[in-house]
Image 1 (cartoon, one colour):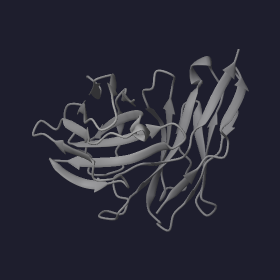
Image 2 (image 1 turned 120 degrees about the horizontal axis):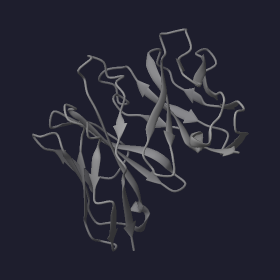
Image 3 (image 1 turned 90 degrees about the horizontal axis):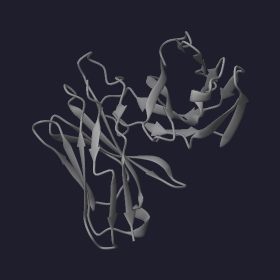
Length: 116
Length: 119
């Protein structure tokens, strides 16, 4: 069974540009989560999508947005990039098949975003 | 809002020895889940162990076990018979079980503990 995949592995942008990060969940998983792992700030929750809807959002400005497609894959868009957006962006997926939100979140390898 | 604190930025252990990583959390909720995740240098986060707050029995997964003290809001991870492959960053994480709450669905992570295993 394929795990969570993310693309690209690395992304280099300049200030003010837009970045688009992509995530494909494990087959059968309907929930996708995005986290930011920045140096000195740890892992911060960004967004949660399930069945195409945004379910929860972390404390990030509106220029961080995303969407989930009918095949449950997801995009994270970061507009007007700032230097402090440089971080590892992790995507995770989970399933509600067992009827509980305690289900494990399976993580992808991440996308390293560098803003120059 | 919930917070998770890992007070040990770095820990080290000799191969085959036992090490305990500390984690405390703050919450006003009574129903929640706690996790330990491992992030090796390859960056892929892997779930090590999970604990449901309503269960008094401490979770165990092979060489990994937890000491869950709900009243003290403490959730430590014990690694027995440490192996070189255990070297990684370890994160303690909290997940609310309160459907519809502002914290629902997301994992709240501690700052992480870097574990070094010496041969």
